[in-house]
Image (cartoon, rainbow, N blue to C red; front, side, top):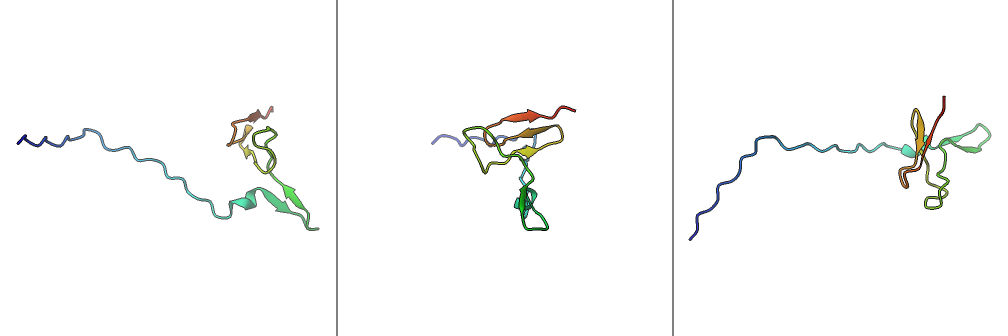
Length: 77
């Protein structure tokens, strides 16, 4: 019978992957209800044909970004 191979010892530790933290009630960031009961959208909806209505763009400090199709609009200051 053949001899069993010795287990390799690694020099560097394993890379710890980033875990995404779930945000509770994240939908509240996208809408605001006025005093008269009207609903106002706080984020811009993606205008591209692939996304359409219902896909909101992320509001960054300097840009608006669609996470689904990658469309980016820069703010000019």
